[in-house]
Amino acid sequence: MPWITKPSGTMKVARRNEPYLTPEIRAGLERDILPRYEKKQGALLPTLHAVQHRWGWLPWQALEEIAAFLGLSPAEVWDTASFYEEYWLQPKGSTLIAVCRSIACECRDHTKVTEACKARLGIDVGDTTDDGKFTLVEVECLGSCDTAPVALFNHTLHENLTPEGVSKLIDGAAAGEHHH
Image (cartoon, rainbow, N blue to C red; front, side):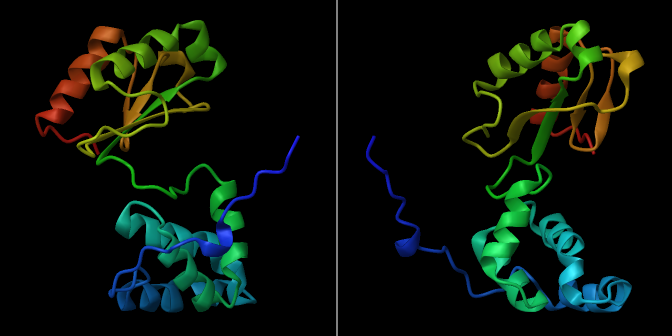
């Protein structure tokens, strides 16, 4: 089988003039986070969180800025950010729907909830709608096994879901009802 090479050496990084690691984020990290660590490289995870919390995801330019700030290589920052599911390396929708797929939710047929989301949104798990409003993912245990099946709409847990119920939640979110 022939090797298929990736053109990583010629990758073009989308750039903007304003930093993602803003002076405000940097000051907060220097004041509240860096003092907790013997070496500033130890603050990588909270730094990734701070930048992602502000922008919703971690563009490559942000990873480069974080690397420079912490004295790491961009590859080290990428390795860490790409290892953990909680970091977004692509833009996500303004409403993140996370359907639980743990054993309890599986026993209560979470797949019907996921399928209803896919049908209502016209996307597959892992995708974002073309309008940027919704991203659908499945996650491991959300810790509400007694009320399975469950899903998060951003930070709000919805329990005892049915396909009809989750479709109504999607319609509400599309109409601007907030699910923080």
